[in-house]
Length: 419
Ligand code: NAD
Image (tube, rainbow, N blue to C red; front, side, top):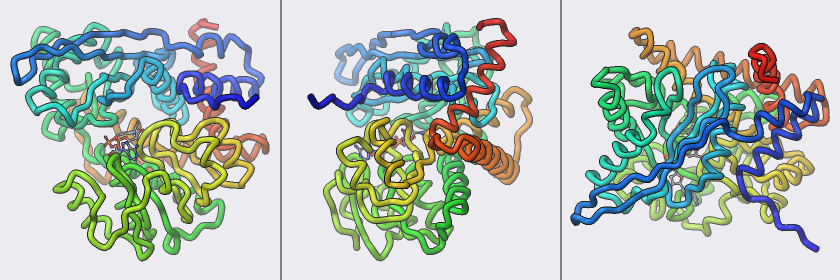
């Protein structure tokens, strides 16, 4: 009988966690306490639509563990949001903060909606309504949201404003990160996820002997993570041969001009139709010949059904959960190095942490300071993960990253007396 591949991200993260706990011979109590989020809130958000009707949207906020510090993680607006997805994303956030040595646990939020179908006014009312609904459980020392898929700085600004109103009119920007600069955002936050990802690609490329100035890359997803990753890779001399977004995929073997493509996407809402490129089936993007593949869209993209066809030497997971456990095994057998999400895209939460620190102290850093600190923190996280992989010999970078993280989390669990 053919067993169906696991695609529920919540069950996937539990499986990944169990593997690392077992590998480290940690007591099962560690798995037992971490296998579920500590708190998951479901909210309904009634929104007055522009046509006068009322529509209720369902949203979630999951807080995985606060053993190391307040929980932290983005809010996603997407039609496919599920409670299990939000729970999984909050758990990945815990392990991401652990790898990057941040004083946080993981959180995540999501609202089932398609922002592309909402007017600006409807989007604002939904954002404010959701912030109000989760206000009792968030706060600068409780749980600090940030942007994720289809949310941005403007949405963070509305949510910060709304949260502060619920607290009697305080002015505390530290409740949320990814804000516009004028409202307490950090310089470098908009490019942080991609910048951090590029540092891990650079380090991995050095280890496996890929010369980036002669390399090619393919990027799935052309939003915050994907478009900045494309630009930063191009700045290093990497030829970006193909990219995709939710509307389709494009290819130019001679290399896409990324700056022009970003401008094109801004005015045309998609990369499709970019002059000089050829449209290809979206499903082909992940299996094109290239040195570096950057999935920067959604979960479950590299699966048992396409992993054998992946031709990249290096996969850098800018997205969360793009590779299933079955696909991980196939990629490992093929000798493909996967820089796991909890390491590859940690730059976003690292600079969110810097934003929070700046908000709490009221002292703001230069773009250079942010970049310098981010580079040091990402390189350290990469080196520690690589060292664990070398030490054990038989673990992939994903399990190694979990192990780096679990070492810190387990120590905190023990010291608090929770296990
Ligand atoms: P975004 O909303 O800015 O962009 C998402 C992009 O993915 C868009 O270009 C969209 O068209 C594209 N997309 C959606 N469905 C697709 C599909 N089926 N095929 C190809 N492209 C598709 O979101 P983002 O912030 O860039 O997030 C992307 C991924 O990166 C998510 O997994 C997110 O969790 C992760 N991430 C983001 C951050 C951050 O700081 N923004 C931090 C860490 C991880």
